Amino acid sequence: MIRVLVVDDQELVRTGFTLILQAEPDLTVVGTAADGDDAVRRCRALTPDVVLMDIRMPGKDGITATAEILMLRPAPRVLILTTFDLDEHVSAALRAGASGFVLKDIRADALAEAIRTVHAGEALLAPSVTRRLIEDYLSRAQSKPVRDLRALTGREREVLALIGQGLSNREIAGRLVVAETTVKTHVGRVLAKLQLRDRVHAVIAAYDAGLT
Image (cartoon, rainbow, N blue to C red; front, side):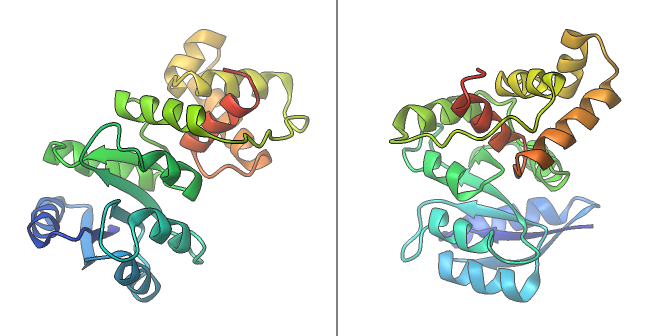
């Protein structure tokens, strides 16, 4: 069972998402929060697996709350809710540690699947919104910290470059003519060696290192 905390300043939105998620057999909403401060408190008390986080809220916003929540141990995954697919604040959420983004008009089945994807340690790279947000983040960055890639093997660098292009494990396997399980192993090693949280941040690392 995946434990979810829903964070949004609008009660109607919180109630709607809660009803949608509670209908799924493998998801349960352990609580809701109306602002960033409340979200941090409830994460400490309820230890959810995934936080569905709105960005624009009165008081502490979703970006600040995300950064604080991801300092907790154990830290949940954070899935950002945004109204607009090019929200100017979303790029900052990447650096704060968010694992993906969904629009508030997302279909019910897609929302449930997004939560499962993030919980599994993956990231929402397929939707065009995420690709554009990553590019927007990189274009806005004042300075780009370049990670030391010397710990990676040549094949791991290839895999990182392909992740940076937004390819799935299956697509990478086809490109490199190897088994999908082999790619999964390489991806896990890349994330571990570079201390990356998930594929979203692997994409950022690939861009920062000039691999993409």
